[in-house]
Image 1 (cartoon, rainbow, N blue to C red):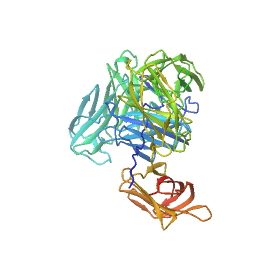
Image 2: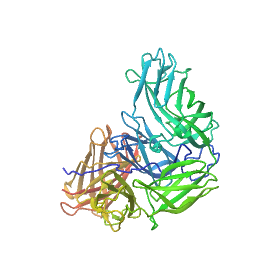
Image 3: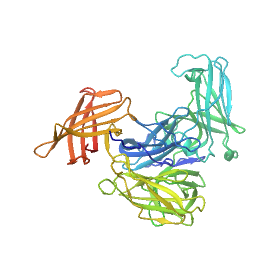
Length: 587
């Protein structure tokens, strides 16, 4: 039995490529013009999304379940998840994350064909704020939020009557919060009552959930209404608004929807709601244009996966992240000058030029580059090769800092990373680990001691760990690596190789597969047997439509490299396509 260390989905650390206006407006991307748009046209494209899920202390949340449509995966020990080259809805898609003890986290993000989007989700603790008898009703207050439910005003989530203790879990999200872009659900994009699509300026949010004495999910009883109060944020106390729409977050679509009105009384917004989820007090606008902004370093290298702020006098400040090509994409208010700053490490740095716009139509801007005046900036660059010594076509470099982990994309076999430290500490110890998205395997880690204000070029990496093996199954947009036990041996004669592999971590119960690969006398190859068992199902029906063997082992310790495609199913009427990539050592 041969063992292989494998990390699935170790991915990014930053916030969504979507830009989010905090206490102002939402800045997001769309390949089409959106001005008073109704129902943006959705289409399917192949794209990727990577993300990181953290708790309130910034620590990665392990084993959280991430969902993208019908696809699911789990976060690793550092909180990373990854969906690679899957079909997504464009111009927007939506990912949800669940973990016991937390409210659902989610992000609605822009999608472009062939690009890698980045999302960062900080999960909110599902804290019980108070309780009362369902027969009597009651009021629960926390952090400037007040929830009042009338007597006999709740029911089970399935609509059945409920009698007993009612507990309220809640969190307040201030428009002044610096981390609003990470903690809020979805994005500040919405449909108003006229079904017009636009962006929101938030005046405060609250996540509310009801549960029974035994943990039953509860809702406001049909025909009843609850009263919701949200305090006016300090930065908005002088705002003259006296009435503002209420919006709820639709977990099925990833957008906010208008329902009701909140009236300002003193420093409180008060409204009534007929159900509980995340609620938002917001102003709506749809006079927007779409802008793509290229962010580089002074030498012209695109800066990927870097957080940024975009601000204007009329719309306030937004937060976003550059994508794998260094592009900051999003919707911006038409006709306003924008100020751009980019975060490098823990320091915010202005760009040159610092202002762009105004824009009155869709377009692009840049390159804008980060100023190089900070003496604590370290730049790293180099090449990344695969097991064949060729430039890595698809992957990342994981950079282990003394206090956190960062991630940068590999483009055309090269990577570039820029980091600005908080203080001038010399001889900082880093570790660089390449990761292949093709084989889902890590390469050899390279330690590196760096000093502030220095450029380190030619730090070349190899994404093929010596002796590594993989048996990678691709199906329905997911990839499963059967790596815990890989055995390859001859069967009857040297022209037959029998491969078995298992995986008990991703699949329950034990997942296993086996194939018999034959080298035919005419030099071709065939696969006469393929058995697959995972997810509680044994798939009796398998058909191999193509097999490609790029290397046949000549001796013990040599490798079999082959790729198979075909279909499988529990019955002839439930067939699904699959792909199988094998790099296995002969016993």
